[in-house]
Amino acid sequence: MSMALPVLCIQQTSAEDKVPMRDMTTAEIVKDMAIGINLGNTMEACGDWILDCSSGTVRDYETAWGSPEVTKEMIQGMADEGFGVLRIPVAWSNRMKDDGTYTIDSELMARVTQIVDWTLETNMYAIINIHWDGGWVNNFPENKDESMKRFQVMWEHISDNFKDYGDHLMFESQNEELGWEKIWNPWGGTEGKAESYALVNEINQKFVNVIRSSGGNNPERHLLISGYNTGIDRVCDPLFKMPDDPAVRMAACCFSNIE
Image (tube, rainbow, N blue to C red; front, side, top):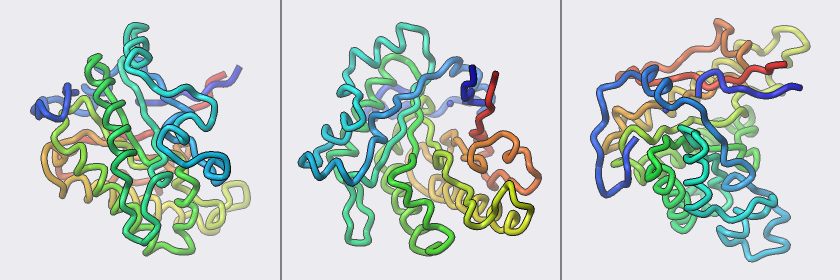
């Protein structure tokens, strides 16, 4: 049987507490996280068809792929089973202004915040990201400037909302979409490879720059950097570069198929 296993998989109680960041390295944080679980098919559920058969509320999206509405009891149950970290993938574009400002809807932000708070109350770690999110990241090669603006603004909004959270909350730059076969076909030679890797590295650097320049605890927050398509073999390629980070608080996100 094949399964995807995070090679790495990184506290606080609630925003009001403004818990200080601990003097821990990212490696120590990762070790403390222990076994993790993914809140899949929930906050990252998306699709144009959802609006065709619903009013497009936060709950409509949350349950669109068959998962039940998340409850505090569900999160506590995960902690009771021994999980140390909950990854919360999010499709922020489900409820985002389409006027070019890329403003994330306050109701969606509040719902993600609620789930994060429930997670931290159990003493688990929480990871939030920009997930597949309708696949808009695929547009980077053709529309780099606008895509980079969207990526930056989204992380400005997310990081500002969670700026006072402690180091039980980690940000993940992106899911596995960083890497484009339209630039480089991994099974067709090396043409375009350096260009595709360079774009991945640039996006990850933008992520770090945005978080480190934001307020609260974000200059010290532990960050999860998306590998090239999150494949361990491609992350180990010398063309993949970890961003420059003044805080030196990062880990790479990659997956390996284990038989």
